[in-house]
Length: 494
Ligand code: HEM
Image 1 (cartoon, rainbow, N blue to C red):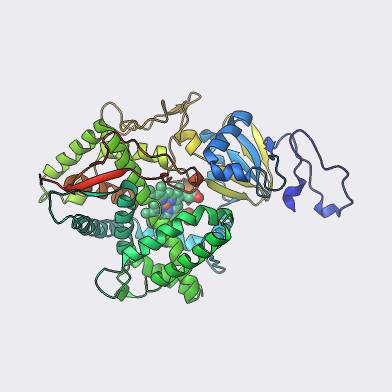
Image 2: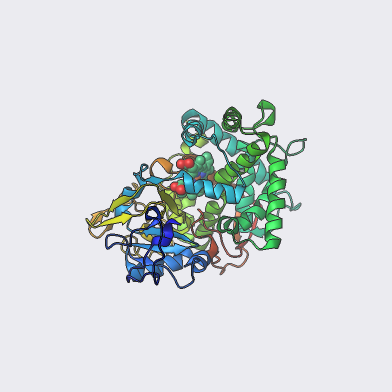
């Protein structure tokens, strides 16, 4: 096995090398490679600590080794790079570093999906085309309608308009945004024979709770059975989506189905691919809205500033400019969202080394990367939580990304160097998020509608934000451990 040739950086080697064929002799770890930390457990290496709390573990490694090091994780060697000034050396190299291989491993583990004749570049071009320009405006306006009607329904459980509804903020945000997003992209409606979005949401949440364990292949036998049955149920629920205009699905999903059919994917494979798309399009937006609304509820000054901005938008003449167009200019909200994502978006950006590469760091140092290893960026540690770049990085400061004159602040520094990547919730480069604009529009509309239609507050006015579920570092938006209890009722009712 390729990794077996790694010698630790103290120079220890296996006792007596057995005679092996010259083709399988691995070269010893050289001075030019990043420091190697194998951990004490054979083969597993640091897998357990990594899985429990990757942010804590990688911070510990950063203190020990600096901005670049290689760790052993479940038989694989992963080089972690934590210097944002050097990220482009990884992001912009799609020749030596490959995005799709590791993505395929995860696709198989989580979605039980293989797409042998699939062309990711064609898929990306198709998705891009549907999530920008005029198509994006159509999607955002459909999303707005669904959000409005779902919010109206959410107020119904209380018959008396003066009564409060209670819920957890995470469930409230995730459920509303997931269902509105599902209706917008996948179709289906309540009260007819199509798939009910609430059923999809409920099954999806069970799936989501097992997702990190599926990715790490650490499901217990009982959990494995649950995962399989939930996945099967979701495949069934998604079966009609994207099949012709009658499905009520978006043109994007219909084109995507068509592409899969052209590539020769059978019906079963297509459903599995739809679950992957459900995760990519719905898995992050609800949790992002939760952190944002939560930070606003626990930071009254930020809430006042966002409300002020939204009020001035509602007061403008809608005959001159439609609401959704006016909602495009919200610098205060945008800064609050950027700040939220800085604190709560924690994806790994992973590439597989497909040919030996010399990685040139911004400080001029060079490191050799070995074919077959993985490279992983973790922007959550730096730039996002780096105290040298963002003062008091643990604190939510809604105006962090605003200049004094109200314009967008883009000047952030580390080691005297102005940074290109000062926060990175959407990834970057050719594999950056295709749905960024749609996601931002959806979250903005949601927060606008909630704040204008509802009186919303914490059940306990002293309650703080819940802790982060530390097993989710590396999987996109973080999720809370527990929830924040809220109550709400229609506005203007006393
Ligand atoms: C708050 C919400 C979201 C966040 C934080 C987010 C974040 C990300 C990140 C970090 C990546 C890059 C992954 C990597 O480099 O390995 C990514 C990729 C992607 N995102 Fe999002 N995303 C969000 C919402 C959405 C939505 C609504 C869509 C719907 C179209 C979407 C579609 C995609 C797609 C298709 C890719 C894959 C791009 C590729 O294959 O190269 N995302 N997203």
